[in-house]
Structure formats: C-alpha cells, structure tokens
Image 1: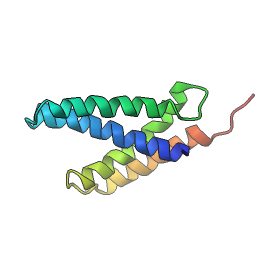
Image 2: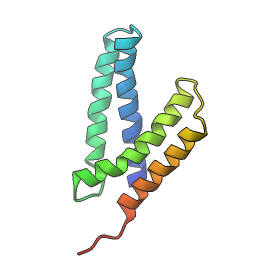
Image 3: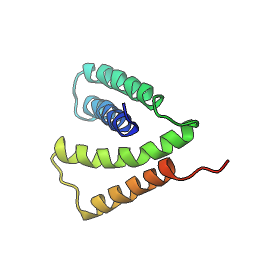
Length: 108
C-alpha cells in the first residue's frame, strides 16, 4: 500500500472513530458507538506504523495535513456542511506542509 493510501485510510479510521465518540457522547447514541470508535482508533494507530519513515514524529507531522483535508471532506460528505473557501485554502496549505515534510531532501 502506498504512503498516500495508508494516510488516507488512517484519516478515515481516525475521523470515523472520533465521530463515533461524538455521536455517543454528544448525540445520545448507544455505547456500541464507543466500541466502534475504539476499534477504529486502534486500526488508525496500526496504519500509521506502516508509513515508511524512520521517525514517528515525521510520519505523524506529515499525516496532519492529510487529516485536516480528510476532516473537511468528512464535514461535507457526512455532516452535510460544504467547506468554504477558507477551509479549502487551509486544506491546501496543510497538504503543502505535509508534502514538504515527506518529500523534502534529507541531509546525511
């Protein structure tokens, strides 16, 4: 699986896992939502260990850009609120930052 696919899958698992807790605690859904959230967040953590990076901090930092953008898509697709132009600009900036972290040349 490519790094982009892993980051995308991780973002979906993290956002869905956090949303499950949101639904349980803020929307009155059953505790089964919390159990689903726990499973999804565990899968998210495992996925991040599959990123080809020598350092966890670098993998996590680059993931941040993907997470921000995926969260905006979640807001649109699941919650029905279309991101505005400032959301879009922020998403692009965050992805650019992730690309710099992932693709920047590393000294010896």
